[in-house]
Length: 169
Image (cartoon, rainbow, N blue to C red; front, top):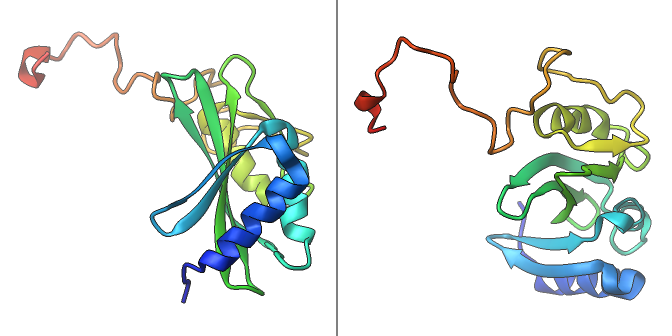
């Protein structure tokens, strides 16, 4: 069973701050997991560090997904990491501007990130630089939009057969 271990959280934060100085933007415990926000410029190096450090050993990428913050004109990438050795999980977050959504791939750290990065690209349009095959995985190849962005229209705007007054519009 997974447990919150404050000492482990403190160790992780201390090591990351020591190694990456000003590149750690914030850290907090959200619900039940330590969440650390890292600048995108050091994300690949930070993931390697978390995997390879002998005390930390975050050797499993549980989840990689995207987010959209339209108010900030940013896209986010979230990595959930698990240390089987220490039975500890953390969440690493970073963000990229919508105008230039590029970030280093995590496939060099965990090859299993391949499919998750392709899905994140497919639905959010985040470009993972260095990815071996960054193509759409679930949507059609010629699609130009990214359906999980909050600015994606939820319904066909060209429909004339519906009465919006039924929906409070």
